[in-house]
Image (cartoon, rainbow, N blue to C red; front, side, top):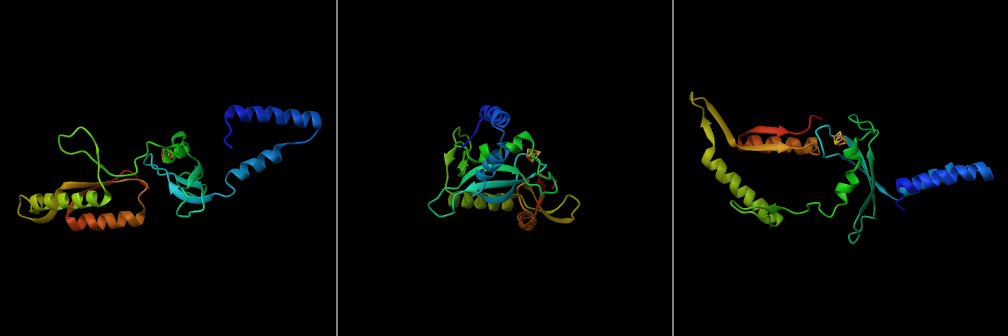
Length: 193
Ligand code: SF4
């Protein structure tokens, strides 16, 4: 059950009254409510995607991971074991649940053609094939074997790669290998973690 701040204040007032009038303390009951919210949830450790700090998060999800069940994120909090943020999140990171469970979240690739004004749907297969074709064409046309002084450089200056803070070390390792194999020299990552 989702409780608003107003509900919380009301419960607090009632709890205080109960303790004063009837002589019992409702704090353990409220603590139990808090535990129940994530009692059956799966914990997934992740990274806040919003900025270069790359704070660690724990995402609580309900749903038994069966194929016909859509997982629901019920809570997101800072990861106390993460060396960057040690359990804290700024207000933006604290609202991460609203980004994950959002009807406007983009879940498929889109393409806007040269001169076009609208974004069009494109399948993952077509998007990957089109990117591969364009990378090859660009590389074939612009690869630099020697610089102006005649030194062999074998580099590709017309393609750049930018990564983000949610990319893992393993992913970044493969990126660097793949990009250097193409000759790409302009590599950057938003995060410094
Ligand atoms: S929680 Fe805030 S500071 Fe941390 S990565 Fe997200 S946006 Fe950046």
